[in-house]
Length: 161
Image (tube, rainbow, N blue to C red; front, side):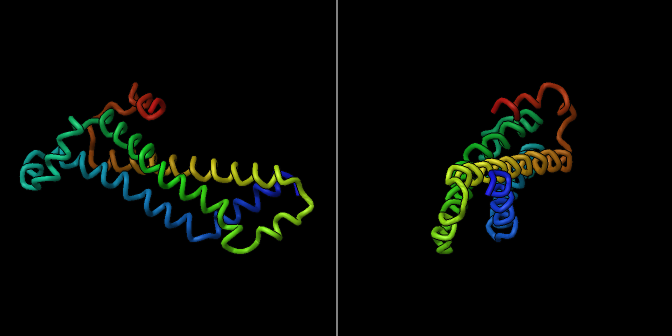
């Protein structure tokens, strides 16, 4: 089995599993919460009436694109440790849980191809999850009508963080 065939098999396993949909749902909550905090910052009367949520939202500062994109980047960094670790452990641990490790090791292919295909599948899946969070975050930013100015230097916040 070649490396590309192994990557295709790993991708098929990920695509057909419920794990990816659960992970996607968990990562959907993050930009929604960031958008909610920015929405509370934009509306001072809502911040006063919401109490603790308004106080927590004030920690982030102003309601603009740089603040919002920094918040999204922090969510990916902190939440990614947990979610990306879960995806990685699921991809490698699935063979043991499904009792297919013996079948996998008897295939006429190099074990390095299998391991590298798993790492590539994990990297690509986690990359797509990050892109999903960024795109959803930008869509939410437009929905809550953040001030204009996204297309200038603010992309460096996402790329650098």
